[in-house]
Each structure stands twice: as structure tokens, then as C-alpha cells.
Amino acid sequence: MIKFPYGIASFLKIREENLLYMDRTSYIRTLEETGDSLLFIRPRRFGKSLWLNTLKCYYDVALANRFDALFGDLTVGREPTLLHNRYFVLEWDFSRIDPRGSVDDIARRLNLYVNTTIRNLLIYYEDLISSSILFDEEAANTFDNLLTIINKTSYRLYLMVDEYDNFANEVMFTDEKTYKGLVHKDGPLKTLFKAVKEFIKTRKIDRLFLTGVSPVVMSDITSGLNICENIYLRSQFNALCGLTKEEVRDMLEQIVKDCSLTALTADDALEMMRTWYDGYRFSADSAERVYNPTLAFYFLKYFAKECKYPRQMLDSNLAADEGKLEYLGQAASGRQTVVDVLQTGKCVEVDSLIDRFTLSDMLDRAGQDNTFLTSYLYYFGMLTLTGETEQRTLLLAPPNMVTKKLYADRILRFLLPVGTDRNEAAEAVRHLIRDSDINQLLYFVEQKLFPIFSNRDYLWMNEFAVKTAFTALLFNDVNYAIYSEPELSRGYADLCLILRPDARPYQLHDLLFEFKYVELKTIGLKGEDIRKMNENELRALEPVVKAFSEARTQLVRYEKALQDQLGKKLKLRSYIVVAVGFERLLGERQ
Image 1 (cartoon, rainbow, N blue to C red):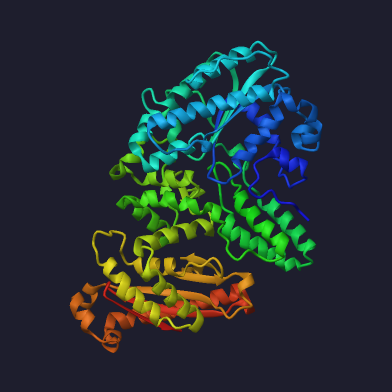
Image 2: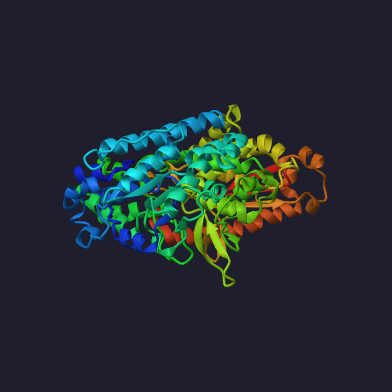
């Protein structure tokens, strides 16, 4: 049975315990040829820490006698570079620094942490570094003392910084004033990186590799460290972190074999994983798409152990990404962007991606245009590149169903803060799923959400609003994959919920919705008039009759397309929902 390294970022542990290791060591030579000081950015939980630890083990002089055991059967082990095991390696992981408190509090922790890493380095390399050094409260001075001693040996220092932006980003989202103090003027973070820059220029530090999630902090400390080469948009590093379709298929086929399942199950599982986890593309010049490795291993480990799919497709470790959408939702433009992504099903189009953000960019919410918001969502893994237009503009979209669920959850929070209304909404959805009766859900949207829709401060409340609300209310990764505007029979269905393969044996149905919005001006009546009319009177209005008729015609075509796709597996229930302004809601099951 495959032993999956879910949540493990230690190369040594993976190799010593014979866990699965996806060989990316061919990139080591490429990185050496690219430059001495590199910045590599990927979304959270994408294997950056494991890659950094792999580099540490490769270059660490103390592990020279274990090189063959650790790397011998890997690509770089068969043809190693001249620099393997030639460095003292100093590692900084800024995610370990508490971001709470004042600038002075964080500065004290930062200096203490760096001094501690230097002390640990001296202990680790005590057989190779015999001299003691003077420790200073200002960690940059201690670092200078260490480098002076190291440069008297036959080795040099490789500095590896993991999550360089972590604690500063945490501060930025909660305390803007403190963040500014950290990265501006003589702030502790900028001071430290100014020292690193100087040590690189004077060759006291021979090589530097930084990882992070976004270029926000790097931009603010750019005068402190403006010699790093950004490699995160380059096509040759697109799959450095991430799993390819072929790798995922090979693992699934092995699991199916170990579990004595059928080949069809492997195909179903691959389609499940493609839908929920695939889709990340980090360079416009690369056609290859990759899977988020943490999410993939979450699924694969469960599948291998239980011989069935996990109940929930969203790994709770990624739920924190919703906070990034919450940040955007604080401004009207950001809220509009979040809704648009889920609402239309269309790609976001921009001329280019911003390669760095400044603090002023992050704080100026009124001035955050579409390019800024799109770039922000790209770096945090909420959008990914899907292609280019004939005019060379970039197209971006949510990479997979997991990220779409995060958008849906965020929109639901816009509409329904946690409380009794959420419970009422959940019961209305269960009534639809259990009894195929849409009326309770229609009543809930009409009574609870239409008053919100009528508030003109919500500019994103347009003819798509009802569909967006239903999408957020119905999103359920336990039973369904949900599609907004899927292409069916040369048309685009409004909303389609397709059962997961493992949900088909249950008393559940595939769901298809067609939404129509009838403007009040089309009817020639005011909202108060519409509210007084009974359902039969509303249904008799000519624009409403026309809306239902058009929807029925469209559903027939979409139903046939789904039947052609899924065949006998399809268990379809179709519904029409007609909104009369944001006053009344009518529906019927086909």
C-alpha cells in the first residue's frame, strides 16, 4: 500500500520511512543555473516547505555521507551538481513568529527567533565550526558574526527562508499600523533584509532561496532586498510544486488494485479529483495544469485506507483561505469581484498580473481595480490562469470546485450571517433534496433575501442575483459537483448539480435549474402592486408566462444533453425559478 506523506514537510522523514516522494529533484540543476538569489511563490499548502527541506538536505554539508541513501535513486542523485553537500544551511521559517502585539514586541520575537536559529546552527555544525560567536540583541549583528566565522572555513552559507511573508501578512490583515512599522523605514523586518542584501552583495551569503504566498511584503521591503529574482511566473517552474494528471492517475490505479476495485472506479476517482483539485496553472507560457498536492494527498490517503472517497472534498486545512475573500469583501469592489467569479461562470480578463503589491495598494480599497483584485486572488490560489485571448490579455478562473466552494461560502456570509436564518435555509434546502419540493426554498429566498436584494447599496444585486443565492445555498460537496453556466447543447444552463459517483446509490437526484428575471418596468407595475397579487395573478402576467415558456424550452434541450452525457446514471430533477423584480418568486418542477 502506498504511504502518502500528507501534511509532512520533512524530506528526511519521507525518505527514511519510505513514504511516497514525488521526484522533483531535476529542478535543482535548473535553479542553480537560474540564479543565486531566488523568490518562489505559490498558494498555501502547495508543498513549498517540503521543497525547501529537500534543498536543505541536498546542500547540507553535514549530510554528505548520506547523499547516496537520500538521493541515489532520484534524478539529481544519478547526475548530481558540483554544489551538493557544500553548504552550511541556515533556515528561517517566519510562520513560527507570533504576529500579535506592537512593533517592538514583534521585533523582539524576530530577533530572538533569528538568534535561536543561529545558535541551533552552531550546535548542528559543531564538528565543522569550532569558534564561538558573540550574540547581539540585534540579530543582524549576530548573523554578521556568524558569517565571519563561516567564511574562514572551506564552505559557504545557503540561507533558506520559508513563509517569508507569513507573519507580516497576518499583521497586515489585522493591524495596518503595526504592519507599516514592520516593513517601513527602520522597521525590524526591513532592517533584517537590508542586512541579508548586504551579505549577499559581499558574498558572505552565497545563495538565498525564499518562499511565500504573495509578493506583498517583498514589495514593501524591496529597498531592503531588491536583488531576488522572481521565478514564480516562469513556465519551467510551473510544476515544481504540484501533481500532474499522470502522477495522480498512477496513484489511483495502484489504490484501485490494492482495494480490488474495478477500473471504472479509477476513472471515476480521477474525474472526482480533476473536478475538485486540478486546474492550477502558474505561467501563461505553460499548458500544463497541476493538482494541489495537499488536497490530492488528503483524498488519496483516505481512498487508500478506506477504499472509498472522503465524505467532504474540502480539506479543512484550506478553509483558512476564505479569510482572503473576507478581506476583499470589506470593500464594495472586492465584494463585486467575489460574486462575479461565481455568478457568471466566465473568465476574468486582465492585461497582466501585478508582480508586487505595496502596503498603500492593500489599504487603498477604493482604488483597487480589477487588475489588482484579480492578481490578489491569483497569488492566494483563488484564481488561476486558463489562457490568453487573441489580443494577449490573460484569462483567469477558479481552478477547481474546492475554490468555488470557498466563493460560495463567502457569498453566503454576505447574505446570511451565522444564525437562525442559516438553520431555516438549511431546512429549506433539505426539503428540496429530500422531497423534490422547491416551494419552501422559494419562500425563504423571497422573505429573507429579497429585502437584502432590494438594498441598492448592493450593486451586485442584478438579474443574476437569484441564481447566485441558489448557488450559495445549494453548494454541497458531500453529494454534488455544482456548475454555474455549464455548456449544454450549444447553450448554457443556469445551474446544474451533478451527483458524485459515490452518492448515486442513495435516494438523491441530479438537479438542473433555469432562472428567469422579469423586471418590474416590463410589467408596468410597482413593487407594492406585485406584493399584493396572488400567485395565480402573477403567473397570468404576459411577461411571466413568456419567461416560463422560454425556460421550459431551454430545459428540454439541456435535459437531453445531460442524458447524452450521463446515460442511465442520470437521475434528474429540473426546476424553473422566475423572479418578478426582487419582490416575488415563482417556481415549478418539470
